[in-house]
Every structure is written in structure tokens, then in C-alpha cells.
Image (cartoon, rainbow, N blue to C red; front, side):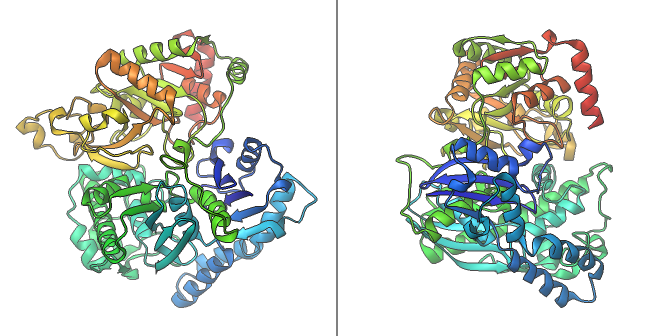
Length: 611
């Protein structure tokens, strides 16, 4: 049975192909269009999935969409009626779009599919899954567990904002829900907006900013904004928020509560903003701990699966793991809306078609999340030549050895190998790499390569067999979704002056043997690298270890601020030429910055400045 899953029309559109229960392909539309968080119909991603499966659209048994538009419209209407006459302007803006496009989404989807392959009754093949069921299916079915508690948390789907269910074999059922407008994801997004970052994309910046502050306002949040119960359920005081009917996330009452106006993006981050970030992060962790403790006690479940946008909060995930209420935790790497495409396809296969569970003999069924496009060596060389690149092609063993030597010499390396990752994290297929031992690498990559805020931390990629020697973690973390501290013996003792520093002044203090990936609280967002899912990346880190005795590299996504992760060799070359990346490795092709056409370099630099 061949099923295509689609998520679209909100943010992070994507497509995924499942054939006889096996995940064949999955990709986000933004990677092809180069528009960050592209919400349009994922034509390019659909075409890629079909090509990867060697299928025509008409050969699919079902096409599954990740949510139910009529239920969303019901929520929209009921919300505006409940808050009337407030929010009339927002309602006036939203209603024409719904009537024109979203309310009759089945017809719209059929039209889009006809544009790919005309002459078929696509409406007859369409299925619609509820939003949080799509999230839950994306978490449970690819997991390595036969049975698990499945917890999903995000902003909002149709009505649901948090759901808890149980998966067993091919069965999955949601047993409990928390409904809009009471939402942990929207609470976090409200603080994302308040601290001057973009909602639905800047939440991870708040998480990265939090360790620079103190949770001074956590009590205010719990006293004034949220009524949090012992079991993790809660209600928000909507008098402080504007997201139900307004055009912003928070209102003047919210700003008055904390004593500062909403930060505009161009304004300097202060200690206040860092403390606000630390406070909402602490509250989020408390909610997740209360939820998981309560659900573990109720169900007796040994395993936990997580999905939804809040499941990308890897700091909170690490706290849940260390809390010890579950033996194992598995988190969907594409936990946000993009992963809903995969969940829709899987729920159609198991719950609609009633097929038996397909599980690999070992590990999960996500293939390391390497589910996107790849390119043959011949294609890589042809595309690079067309882009004007000057490169040297070498055998793979030489490519690994020379790249490891460049990294050991402190060079920033663009690394483009194999199939592109599915989800927001670069996992050693479309990555920028650096030496984790370098005390200047974090600042270099942030300011000269990524063109982003200096406070942003970088993640370590570490050989799975070495992780316990460097971090307080001895679990698989292949998707960079768990945070743990550097082990004490790798830390550096700080002086009294250094310990007394506050806020952003903490940034330049080297805290361990691997300062480029050690955050100011000694934590790190860890990716364990496995030989079976990414042999080339594993070999590179092993070669680097042979030169340096360190099995850890800096790994950040191959892009610059405001752009999606690169998809093609041409994208990689453009990013390489427009930044201070010193080496580029695409397949077996090695590119040195000094060997490139200087005029071409200037053109790309200017293009990035214009962007």
C-alpha cells in the first residue's frame, strides 16, 4: 500500500511517502523553494517523494492530509463569538481567506494534485487526520517501542493543544486532551514575541537565551498567567494575551505585569530579556515534568514518545529523561508541523487501512532522519561545474582524512553528504562543522558564517560509543533532541571573577575542553553519531579523534540566518562563497575558498548582503 502524507497552509509544509509501512521519503517544501517555513502546497516535496519511490501520483492508494480544516474553522468561529465584539478586525481579516481557500481545502488539494497529474478523481483518494493524531502517529509508529505513552504538545491544531494517548502494536488512541486557548506552545510563543523574536521560528532562540538569565519571573507566570495543577493540566488567564482574537500574542496588560514593553528586533537584548527567557523555560520544564510524572503514574507506561512543536525543546526533554519516570524516551525529529505529513501517512496506513505494525529489527524506522534528496557523484560534479566552482575530486578515504585535518587545523567546513535530513536539525548530511576544542569557534560561526546572534549555542556531534566519556548521558540521541551537561572531569574550573559574570558577559568564558559546544550552564544539545545510519560522518569524527583524541565536532545547520538548510550542491556552493566557510566538501569533491574565482566570491557576498 502506497500513501502520501501532506502538511501545508500554516507553516513548514512537507510531504512524506510510506510504502507498505516503510518510510521511503520525506522533505520540507522550504528546502526546494528557498523560502523559510514555506507554507504553500508542497509541490516540490511531493514530486521528490514520488521520484524517490519511483511512483506516479495516480499509483498512490491514499493521500492523507495532516489536519481537519472544518474543525479548525469551527474553532475560529466559536472563538470569535466567545470574545465578541473584541477581535472584529482580526476576524474581518481571517474570514475572507477561510471562505476563499481554507474552508473548502479538499477541493483546493484536489486542484493542486491535478496540477501535478491531471485527469484523476483526487478528492476520492484524500483522507484527513486530526492534527494531534498526526503528531502522535509520527511519534509512535517510527519509534522502536511496541508499547508507549504518546504525548504531543504544540500551539494548537484544530482544538487540541496537548494530547496524551497510548500506542500498542498497530493501535494508537488519544485518551486525554487539553484544548485551545490553553496552550503551552502558545504561552512559549507569547514570550517569544515579547522578547522580540519571530513566533513559530524564534522559540529556540528563547531556549538558547535562557541560560544567560535567572528564572526571576517564573513565580509571576505561575501566579498571574497560569493556573497549573499537580497533574500538569493548566488554564491560562486570557486577560494578558491577545492571540485569540487580536493581531499580536500579548497585550498592554502583559507588558505592564513585567514592567517592560515588547522588545523590537533591533533593540539590544538586556539582562531583563534573559531573565524572562529563563523564566518561561523553567515554567515549561515544570509543566512537562508534572505531565509526564502524572501520566507515568496513571498508565504504568515504560516508554514515552513525544511530538509537536514543544517536543523540540530539548532542554525540557533532557529534564524528563533524567527524571527517570520512563525507561526510554523517543522524540520525532520532525516534531513540528512538517512531521505531521509523515504522521498523516502513517495513521492512514495503520488506523484507516488497519495494517499490521512494521518495525525494524533494531532502532527506529526513521533511517537517522536521512529521508531527503541525494545526488550521485556525477551529478555533484556536473552541478558544481555549472555553478562555476573549482574543486578537486578524491577517493572517499582521502576526502575523510583531509577534511579531518582541516577541522583539526581550526577551519570551518561545509559538509554535504548523502540524503538530506527531514526536520529542523542538521545531522551530518547538510552541516557546517568546526573544532569543538576551539574557544573562538562559537563566535566565528555565529558572526562570520551564520550571520546571527552571538549568544546562540552550537551542538556537539559525538561518536555514540564515546558519548558517556564526555557528557552526562549514555543514551542514543541521534536527532539532537536531548540536552545533558558536560561531565565534570572535562570541565574547566572558573575563577571567582568569571563565576561572578552575568548575562552575555558569560559568553566568552571557556568552560570545558570543548568550549565551542559547552553552553554557559555547562549543557550541550547532543547528537550521537551512529555508524549504521551515517557511516561517512562517523568515519570523519573518528578520523578527527585520531588526530586530536577528541571525538566531538561542532555541528550546525548548513545555512545562514533567514535561509532554509541547503538542499542541492548549488545551494551549498552559494552558501560557501557568501560566507567565511573555509572548506566545502560535497560528496568526494573538495573545495578551498582560496582556489575560487575572486569575482564570483564578491558576487555571492553581495547577494547575501542584499538578502
